[in-house]
Length: 251
Ligand SMILES: Nc1ncnc2c1ncn2[C@@H]1O[C@H](COP(=O)(O)OP(=O)(O)OP(=O)(O)O)[C@@H](O)[C@H]1O
Image (tube, rainbow, N blue to C red; front, side):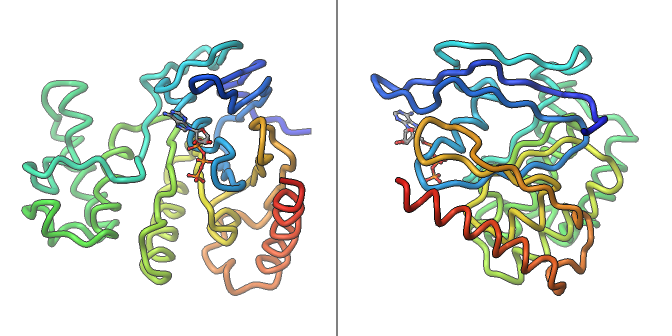
């Protein structure tokens, strides 16, 4: 039994698009400080779940209950398409969330932003515009922007899907290291089983219909940067792949 506190709970959530009910009566609790990854067949409702948590989708029924010291303002999201403004530099894009929130940034925030840019390898690119960046660099700017808001909950939708394996793994390592400095709750949607295992202390497998959580896999090795080279990593990936195969077979 976990002794972590719930940070947000879905209670009997139903979500419709037009006439179609994508999520039916979902009860789900996310605990503070955990890293969740969500996997499942294409179209099963992963993004819908994330958007609903961010307040971008309204449930047709049920409610979302936040822990008393958390509100929607404590949630930051990294979007699939990065969401960068093309007319702003990397530095300005990084600071955008903070600037919108407070009008200006403090010296401390400026310093943290420079340190973060360094950690994410963005320092040489700060004066560039998004069209001058690679996909991986854009993704890092989007992550930095979300991170600088000091969210309690960080949502990431397919954050590294467009990247080659090595760039993806470098960024996964960077974000895992960042998380060690501040244990926030993060929820990542991914299609990639290896990514789900590397980035999740708990991996949630969604059903192909109805948006239910069919399986929850605990990852006791979470946080180990050398995990990819270990047999335990491979074994957990195989276990999840088998469970996913069953979901596909039933669809
Ligand atoms: N704005 C919308 N209007 C109507 N239907 C939608 C809308 N957004 C999503 N859907 C439908 O809801 C279902 C779930 O979509 P969602 O994007 O949440 O799935 P997903 O699991 O994230 O898919 P993928 O893995 O392919 O990104 C799909 O059948 C999709 O077609």
